[in-house]
Image (tube, rainbow, N blue to C red):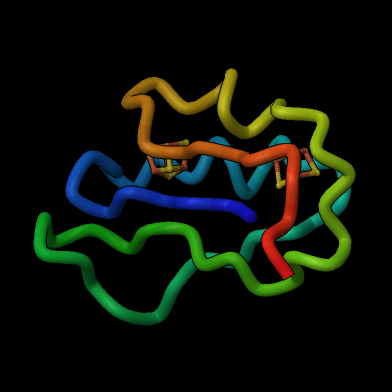
Length: 69
Ligand code: SF4
Ligand code: SF4
């Protein structure tokens, strides 16, 4: 499970750029902050490497190791 807190996200899209599995795309919807946040488009591709979490300067991403299915 991937959580993106769009209230923290400043739309730098480092997460989109650095995810090795291209899990994210740039959202077409503006967030409340007035930026285009990442959208978790292909969650099933995530290998839980946590790179997006580490790259995010605003601590807006949390990747849970367990998927609650
Ligand atoms: S790296 Fe963080 S702040 Fe930048 S777009 Fe992704 S979630 Fe938003
Ligand atoms: S944990 Fe790794 S594979 Fe999953 S979304 Fe983040 S960068 Fe991509």
